[in-house]
Length: 325
Image 1: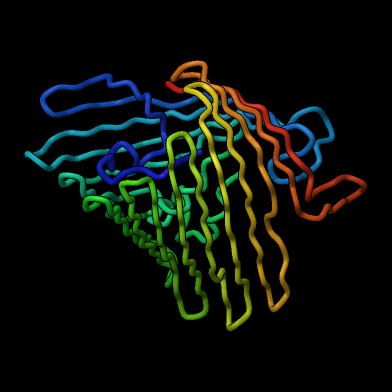
Image 2: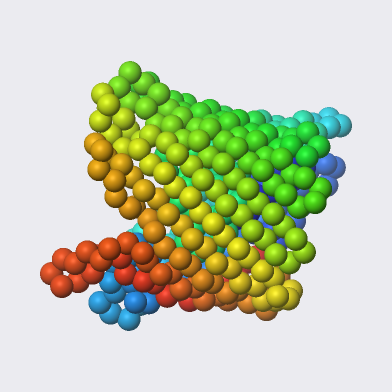
């Protein structure tokens, strides 16, 4: 679960780790922080992919660990480095490198290199705030946690700007993304992003619009995208996707959100729904470190059965408990 952030907090927001990261060293313009989370996630009825659960529960518990370093070089210029890894349930699942990059910050304008988010993510994050959101990261050039990325992130007053270039080792496969966000003083946010990757016979592209509004404890947002994915000599897929989300904070401890998420793909003139669902979720924070939540995802896709077992279209009930450190 993520939210867009102000450009003035570039260093703190470049990784989706806990905001509670502990400062373990700070001296002479250099600081080092350690943070992370441990999160139980249990799915009942169906998995997050919409497949029926034969037993009791599908466990997707995870743990994250992140390191952040920053040191002042001169007044107004500093260097930084970020690492975050994740371990999923089970000893044989491996340790995933989520983020791994370093760069320079020039008084709120940052240049960074390594595994990090593409620029479009600042717009898709406007609705990517629940357990089953995130449909807008359809092509690689518009996704988070991508390898070999060179990024600029900064802002001018109420405008946040980002530009990323992904340099891949395969021939004619580099990608790019540019995005901007305007935040009005009365709680209105407007976002626009374009992402793409081109070669002689392959083209990925995505244009993404975002609109958000915050009024006291209420947050409303919507994102809409269109694009092409792996077009080969006129044959391939085109997609349309949108998300609508509403969140209300009833108190410091309790909040609730509702999401509608949808994606349609068109392949060789044939249209089919890839995602179609409604999520209702409630969060309860015991303190700044520990929260629990319950989410119900109503899957709108047609059920598909294989050997009398649903493999697509099943609803999901998720229970979660998360500790941030």
